[in-house]
Structure formats: C-alpha cells, structure tokens
Image 1 (cartoon, rainbow, N blue to C red):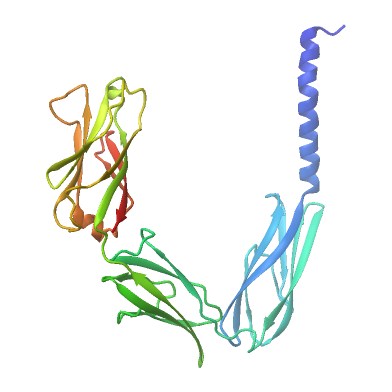
Image 2: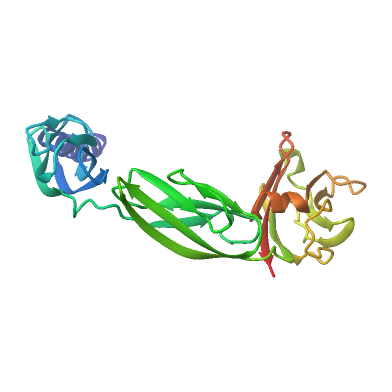
Length: 316
C-alpha cells in the first residue's frame, strides 16, 4: 500500500512528466509560421540592391532558411541581401524548416523604371520634444530608391548625410527640403518647421534623491535655489525607510527671468542627522540647460552613493 507521502510525490511527478513530454514532442516536431516578407530596394535602375526581412514565428533551434530570389540564385541567410542585375518582375520565395515543421511564402518583386522611381519622404524628432531655439533636430529619412540626398534646412545650411542632425540657432519658420536623387531623377519633399523663442518660464516638477544606507531612519528634504535666492523647501520624509525618495516640487523659479546665463540652479540635500549643513549640493548653470537643448531630466551623481534627478518643464 502506498503511503500518503508516496501518493503526494506521484501526484506531483506525473503532471510535471506530462508537461515535459508535451514540450519535448513539440520541440521535436517544431513550429514555423511565416506572416510576410518586407523588402527594401536601393537604386532606381539596375543593378538593384534589395534587402529582404522575414516576419515569422518559430522556435529558435534547428532552423533552416532558404530564399529563392527568382533569378536562379538563393541564400540561406535569415535576413538576405541580393543584387539584381536586370529589370524585371521576380517571384521571391522564403522557406523555413524546423524539424518536421515547414512553411513558405512568396511575393512579387517589381523592379522596373516605374516602380523604382526615386521617392522623397522624411520626418524629424527633437532632442527634448519641443522646438525651442536653439533646437537640436534629428531628421529621419524615409525615402525610397535614391542613391544620394541633399537636405536644405531653410537657414542656409545643407547636408548630404542620409539621416542628419541639425541645430536651428534662432526662432523662425524654416522650410526644410529633402532632395532624393537617383541618376537624373530627383524627388522633393518639404515641410515647414516652426522654431520657438527660448522658453521664459522654468519649472522644477519633482526631485528624486538617492543616499547611502546610513541615512535610513533619518528625515530627508531638498532645498531649491536659483541665482543665490531660496526658491522652495520640499516636504520632509519621516524616518526614511528606503531610497530613492521622490519629492514633488511643482515650483516655477521666481528668480529666473528667461536669461540663460551663469546663474546656478542648485539642489541642496538635507538630513536630520546634521542640521548645520546640507549633505551635498548639486548645481547646474542656466546656460548649460540651453546648450543641452533644454533637457527635461537632469541627473547628478557624486560617486559616493549620493545621487539626484530633477524633472524640469519649460514654458513661455
């Protein structure tokens, strides 16, 4: 007769074994499903350089990729690159095999003068998500079939880099134009960018503090200063149990007048362990905020376990 311990052990082992067996059989059989194929064509005339990307679901072991490019050539790369020497319409087929599982998918690839004409398109992202002057802008090139590019930023500067970064030093409305060029074919796309005047209002939203464990159990708070003037004292923690601690500030800097000069924005960290002096002080000049293109998060670290992060907002 089996004991209760043996019965409990069997009730545990049998389900685990069934799950293990199911997973093992599934892995032996494999699983493959191809959802689609994405292609990216460079050049507007032969030879065409084409990049192929699979959209597929499969397990990670024992995979075999086979690309048939439709011109009597093939590849076993996962993401394939192929050069077509002549115009034409090609049937491209991807096959993926994993153990006993198999799937394939085909697309028609049109490489003709009409289907591969140069096409210009772009977007942008700013460093701090707001186009305050000076504005650091990253341009994202979504053009197709071009072999070279000419950017005109509307302020007299140009670039031939595919994805350039450009700084607009002054406020204004700029017409930015991208010329996507292939042979004698040029496609143009432009849009206006409005660069705002430098912000005149600076708000400290919240401050987060890290301190060594020696300050656990103490009261901790932050004093905020600008240009030598006390702006606000945060609330106090009560017997801090862990770090980091976040202090809501929601404080517009009264002494900030919109001038990005050498005036310091200062954060003093205090503790009830010593009311005579702050634990440490972190500071940054207003002009550094502007030269960093108005960061919304500034961080400090003294290398000894004392760190601070402050969230900022800029307004006009």
